[in-house]
Structures are given as structure tokens and as C-alpha cells.
Image: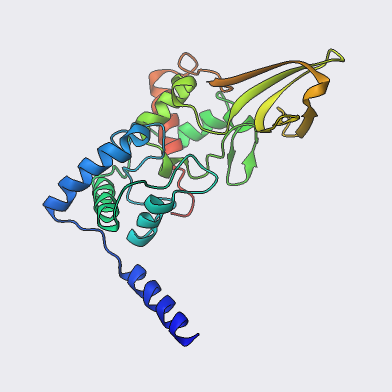
Length: 250
């Protein structure tokens, strides 16, 4: 028992001291590994469909040890999978490269965040679907930490062309029931017999497929409308400045 506790204590101590390499050779190798294993989802770090890595504060990885753990095991309940075919040293080099992206991350961008917040709450009507700090709708993703998770470029794409930047787990499903009633919402879960969805009012419904005469799934089309023509260029810049400022307590 004592040996088990000692081994666990040593493992935790080593984990706490884990440091990603910063030397040039390791960063070059980390880039190669990143391009092979990570770039399909993360792009260059700030232009992919997955989380923004060009930030000094990674939401799920405040330490090098936690970053390596995410690379090794993925993040449950998200699209982030565990690494396959990488050694511990290779994962450390990937972590080192990702950390190097954060050291060059912008801390501020053009635009007036206060004006952007007014647009978010007013002209854009964004709070009707999205939540920030517990306030707002639930039919779209929570944006409380969006500035730490997405780059300014990705935020702009999401607003101008939502279909090009789909967030996993937010596809729509439309059902026509035998009664003639039509029900639409965010698809939460589906099996051979039932479909669970959250409707526009935030209510969760589970509907038996036997009660439906037609089921349409929008797996590649976002429920969010395109706002490219809603905002002027200056307004878009202000709105993105506000969204980029949303970083929770980081």
C-alpha cells in the first residue's frame, strides 16, 4: 500500500514538473508532428474548425502537464480525440510547439468592444440564442469563453458564413409528426427509436421515431443565419472585438 502511494506521489510530482521543450530543434520537430496529427482540425492554430491555439491561455490546459494529458487522452464529450502513435517525448514536443503559438498571440485587436457588446445585445440579437456568463439563450453555443477558444478570423467566419465553421453537437433536426405537427431543434441525441432535441424555447423533447412521418437532419448546415450583410465593416470589427474579449476569468 505504501509503495502504491509513493509511486502515485512520484507520478504527480513528475507531472507537476513537466515542461515542454523550447529549443529550436524540438520546436521544428513539434511543428512536423503537429502538421501530421493536429492541423486537420486546428489548421495553423488559429484558422481551423477546432479550438484556437494561438492564445497564451488555453482553457483546458493551463500547464504543460495538462496540455500533454489532453494530447494523450483527448477531451471527453468533445471532438478532441486522443493521440495515436505518438510517444511521450513526441507529445511533449507537440505541446512545446503549441505553447510557442501562444507566445506570439495577440492580446488585443482592432475595434471597440463596448460598441460590439451593444451590437451583440441589440442589432445582432445574439443573446436570444447564445449565453454569456449565464445570461442569454440556449439554442446556440455558450460564448462565455469564446475569445480564448477562437481566433478573430474564425469568429468572423462564424458570423459571415456559419456553415463554414460548424460547431460539433449543434446540428438541427426537423420532424413532421403523424399529427401534422412540425418540430425542429438542436439534435441532442438519437438512437434507433427516439430523437432528443432542444427547441427554440430551450425545452428538451424526446420524440419516438414511430410518431414521425419524416425526419430531416441538417448535419452540414448551421441553424445560425449568416450576418455578413447585417453589419457594416466597422460594426463587424467592433462585434469581433467584443467576442474576442470574452475570456471568462482567464
